[in-house]
Image 1 (cartoon, rainbow, N blue to C red):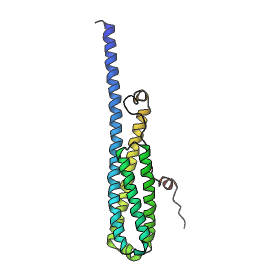
Image 2: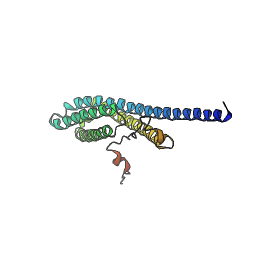
Image 3: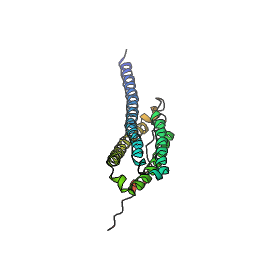
Image 4: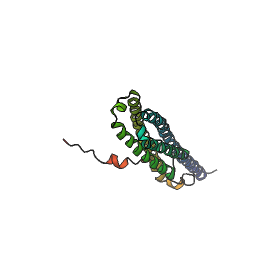
Length: 198
């Protein structure tokens, strides 16, 4: 074996190792964003479990507000279905869009419930209601942090996949589509600066 053949063999081996490294990095980044979604899954399930307790606590006080309570439960069930679809394929744009729409509906229903609760001082003063509301607020914060971590992982995956030379190999390795960011309906509200008046 001549010197030229040896150099050629070393180049081929180095190229194979480089291709394997690209494949491994793509798999690692995909697993990272899927794991990040599982954190959202945990927090949203926790939130969905709190909502029936909140509604049950409010039922005694809000008997004539049954429509609002039923709307909250219906929105919760729709959001759970959206979460199940998204958890099955966290990279699917359609599944994440369905989850985002369902979460928007749930946020609206919970907002209406909050307005109704404000109108009933006895309910606002109820210890269980206060505790459930605080837990729900805490869970909302956890969902926001989990969503941020997921979106960061998706961005890192997409950025790596779109760079050169991984872009040449990603499709061959089964990484055809970019992962989708999870954006809830509150995105527009978060972009607007709060107004303060005196």
